[in-house]
Length: 163
Image (cartoon, rainbow, N blue to C red; front, top):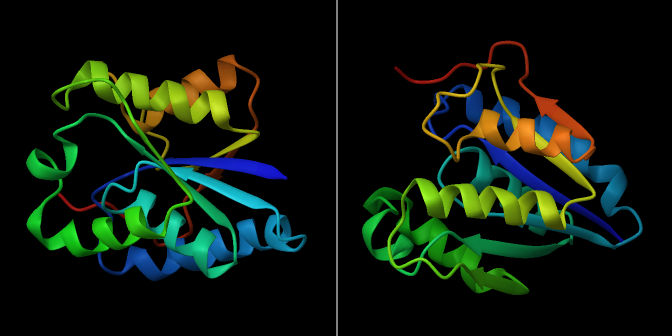
């Protein structure tokens, strides 16, 4: 069994989505060949959701990490709600962290769970350094590398972020 966690940007452009999904399918495919792929994701919009969908499409088992008790109600945006709910329902395990509200501490703790559970980390990441706010994509990459967890960076040619 190979457990692969994901971290990645929320703000992928519309044109980036199919590029990232194809790259994730190619990357995860060999791990799914034996039917023992486990994917760990917070299923936030963007990269986390694309990864979770790829894991399930390849026949893998999904583990969802929810940063706080209020995450669905107060953080998941309306346009992402149906996808979020569908993925949580499809998950083989849902880990809800013991924080009442989403915020820096909850996101840092969620990143720690991703790294603790992972044999590998997939980072849908443009390479930008940590922002200093904690709990972001670059922070998860730094933590994984410090823990000597292999990191596979996915940022296909032509990929971009909104804004």
